[in-house]
Length: 295
Ligand SMILES: [Fe+2]
Image 1 (cartoon, rainbow, N blue to C red):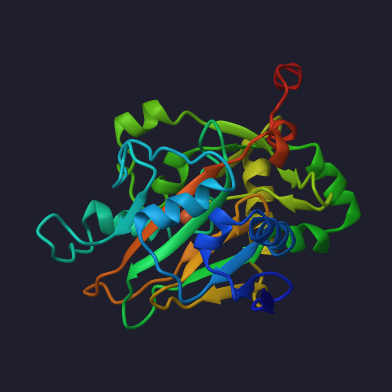
Image 2: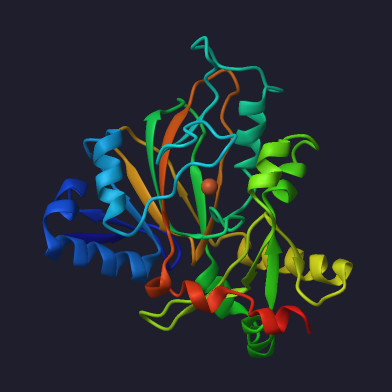
């Protein structure tokens, strides 16, 4: 397996590996898992991609999420990201599917608004527009390491509230349905996720984050905005241009990502599988303790 650097200090292509081998060969899994922990974004080219192969590969890393209410693929292990309507045609720009794709173009980490956040997301491109539609990544681990030590120490003991309705509200006021609001109450997570395997810490941030526990709302939002700007500073991203046969996986504990726009009349179809974080991934260290919450 060859490891080819792609981004500024993170993100690599793994050459000479088929994702099917990760499922059947424990040594290959160990090598890929080590690369995942170290490099945060992994690109596999020239794969034979279908739903079953993608899910089998994803399951090696932990329990798969069941897709939430209100998303295409709800009730399955697949999130279907597309702007293709029921009639097979690309939907107009004000259609819910198009607006949801615009929400995906905000910097975020997947599933921070869920009761169990995500360890990793695995994404494959099934229909690729001729132009645009890239996925852009930043390392929130490197972003954390760029901060002043005093601020790092403060953030390690700070907690942010994440709400799906908050990020969607930045696109359209009614983009979150009453069913989604009921199923997805706000969640509170530590602002720094320390990887228990290598001890490296990362900012845990997303467009879903709207407040900092115990901070006055305006000051909390200002700090979140400053951290988002620092984490997404120019020159710090890796932009993945999709080719047929690509599978990309990323560490939701240590990165943020966003979709890039593409011509509205062109079709784009992506399929995501998402693996929940568990105790071995450091999940329990991320929770706000009940004692702290009432202080
Ligand atoms: Fe995402």
